Length: 221
Ligand SMILES: C[S@@+](CC[C@H](N)C(=O)[O-])C[C@H]1O[C@@H](n2cnc3c(N)ncnc32)[C@H](O)[C@@H]1O
Image (cartoon, rainbow, N blue to C red):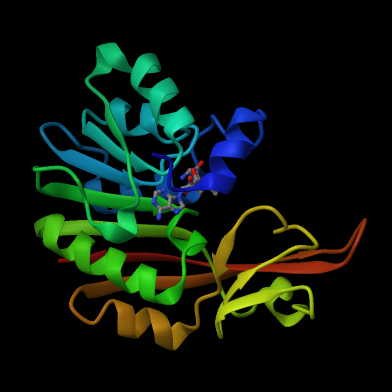
């Protein structure tokens, strides 16, 4: 079974093979863990090509992942077999298939690839599987300030008012993309303590002018 059909095909074709850890996720993790992860467990939602795995292992954490691409899951379990890494193929919007409770549950750019209702279900599952005092970090959640949402046209399928499937432009072929409003994030994290929420807007001037807008956040159970 492979949940994220589009992503499985992208990885099989050698695309999005990010292997360098994402700096915003490193910053959030250091800010709240103080760099000490010994004896702690981290779960990553949608670990993709495994860019963030060596970083969490370097902090001494036990690493678990859920990934929709069966192809990528197999590669990661083989690559990190001797480091105790456990990655399962699954759809995190349907629940978290590990027995363990986690000190950290993290996401970079994966939760935003789902509709609003699926994000809501994901965060309910995250809340259940976080230890009391545990942290959730969300990085690169596209926001409603993003040009792609403003420029959606008749070729764009709307799953809900802020979730699109694009057939043209940068997001074409990447499946579902949700663009968060500030209010949606407050509502989604009602049960958590939301510790910080930032929005990054990156303006590209050339070769084409565009604005990429996304949110980073930290929350605690
Ligand atoms: C943009 S990539 C990010 C990969 C990785 N987190 C990184 O930072 O390099 C999005 C990933 O999320 C996975 N994904 C999206 N929705 C998912 C879901 N509901 N269940 C499991 N995996 C999902 C996709 O298969 C893909 O690998």
